[in-house]
Length: 72
Image (cartoon, rainbow, N blue to C red):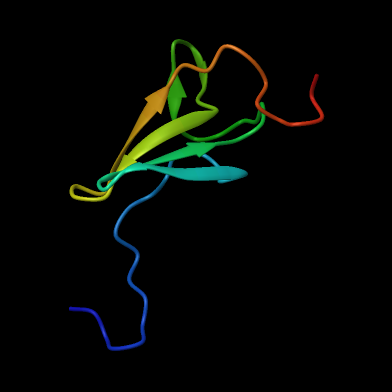
C-alpha cells in the first residue's frame, strides 16, 4: 500500500536514466551511455530499456551506438 505523498519502489529500470522519454501511455524508454549496467543483452550490458508502466518490467534494447551526446 502506498502512502499519500509517499513513494514506493515498484521495479527497476535496468539501466541508468541519462535520457528518458514517454513513448506512449504505457511505455517509458530509458537511455544510458555505454556503461556497465546490470541488465544484459546479447553478451553485453544493456544501454537502453523500455519500461512497461503496467507491469513494472524493463525489457533491454540492443542499442548499436553510444547514446551519450558527446560520445560522437
